[in-house]
Length: 613
Image (cartoon, rainbow, N blue to C red; front, side, top):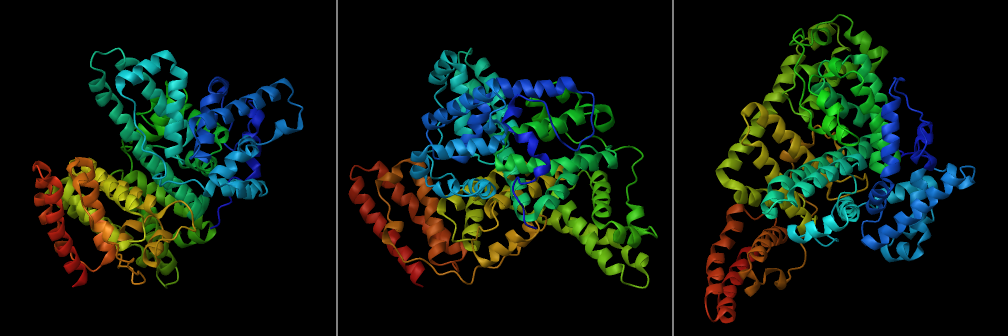
């Protein structure tokens, strides 16, 4: 399904520039008496215009310096001030996102310097898509983000909190171009609390290590989740987003009434659309509207969100949508979905309103199985749909589809077995050993990816398994499948036109629910042609005496060996490392240069022999 990024004119008024300061809204959620909540959202946008627009500019022009982004923000604030003085001006009725992109295009040196002139010559709808598609999730083109030394950072923080945090927003936004603006600013609010607290401590380093690390970990995981949902929208359309969110909402709020779920689902794809495109005003407003609606009836939805609803914007959105636990299942909830597998009217309901019927099934099955991974529940929905398509053509449909639970159990057990095997493997090998296996696997399947991407995706898999595999087995299953699915979503990328190789592209184009299973059974790319052999790729010198350089070279050696000869067995690759300890011992000798030259020659000959065999 083709996704038309943010051209849904029915919600156009939400993003108008004047709505940084106006409460006029047009959304499909029912009206609720929450004027105070609307005012709070409005007030937040007014008080945080600098930070909100910094997110937008930094995500659109990731290469720009902080000074360049700051200048764009100043221009936007000046524009808003002008419109506040006279809202009758023609330019003041335009969408905020269009104005933001125009402000970028007005600085011709920027468009020429960073190569997005083509986005500035298109009509509005094409320009939006152009800016969207130039966002890059592989940020190896940026210098690594160095968190300032706590002592120095605290001096800067105490001297000018606003600028310090705004610079932090800039750095995070440009490295996470698909993280939703409310989420990013909620994380920054947490970082502000940590900075205020830790800058008062004597041992600032230890304080930041303990308190800031969870924020960094949350940032990585949440950014991956939101990037993944943007990929679902781009590749599978609003329907794909809707089915993904049915699972999440039904598991988080198993008591939710189906009619209320449907009302929320009417606006969630629109919110995701605006947030993914980078329309920060639209993103804030629709998320706030949805959260306000949830918080208007917390007891009927969940026993776990009342405290979240007491928080301010945007922290409560992050608390409810991301951090709140799944509520307990209703005690009267049946353990089976009888009416979907034993009802006489199943085929009739399918033919009358197929999408709504499948949504209802997925909702019921998800809230009954809070322990299952999202992808497994989505697979079950696909299996159920295919089962009914087949059974409803038979003479005895009920007899046919009544065996559906067996098929659901089979796919669940298969996925559970894979997750358990992978965790056993992880625990046997340890983090570095498991990393090596992941890197070998990904390089064999997708040698066309850059070394940076292959290493990054492998490290993310290790991080996921290190988080999940020490949980109780009941929790382990969902954790592994959900997080591994996010990594594969990142590998596949956001845009439809991203191509890696035919076999990987096939997995990426398939339903995100079946993607992990597809990758597990992925054959190697038969169309792949190894690059020309370059001796410098297998050259090592005294730089290996630095620990970080040693790790980098070891990892790049794995990638380069497999790229040269994808049929290499794991054992053959690992044999190359048997000489590394001898090579590293040269770091301890007085004649390091000559030692490295001699030992490197032995290793190089071994590499040539393996690649030539």
